[in-house]
Image 1 (cartoon, one colour):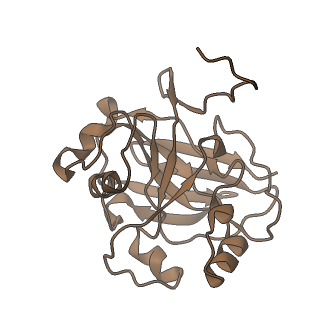
Image 2 (image 1 turned 90 degrees about the vertical axis):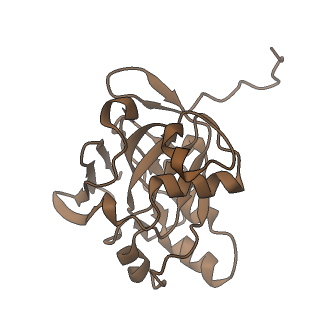
Image 3 (image 1 turned 90 degrees about the horizontal axis):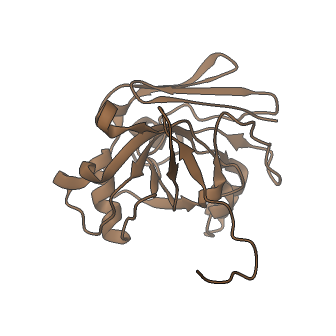
Length: 228
């Protein structure tokens, strides 16, 4: 073992439903993967190739912990998503075998500093700081695919203070989980521990301090956090 010159950071992980923990290596996120959301963001919903951005693994917020309202923004938005957890890595994965690489699924929130993201887009600059800030990825327990299978349909919903904000169905994904994995594996070699946030349906909107966010994905699980 190397002799580290500083204390190594703790391993980011998701709790597994039924017990255990899933170590997280990287977080990839798919942009505009529901047609209605693409329209509300002013984009063409035609089936263009998927595009990706990243969050650091330690952006995960787990076990229903409160989410601190982040600095440098006045427009924090929620984005409810299905999360796929990679258990077996690989590159150039064929679509027909892609789901064999998934260990499990979770419900997650891609929280976004929309004003920072919008300004960066306008100026042609990277928008990582609109997406990859501290605690920007609240995520629920991971459900093993061996138990729930690979959901291709089912309700996905987010409530804020009890009122429905986002509601759609996994069947409305433009790029399926298998297609997304196959495409992403052509760009990077996927590895065990990678997470893929698969995109959000329409209804994204701002939240404020004190708001309670409760997300649910049929047959997968839930995610819950309060903005403080």
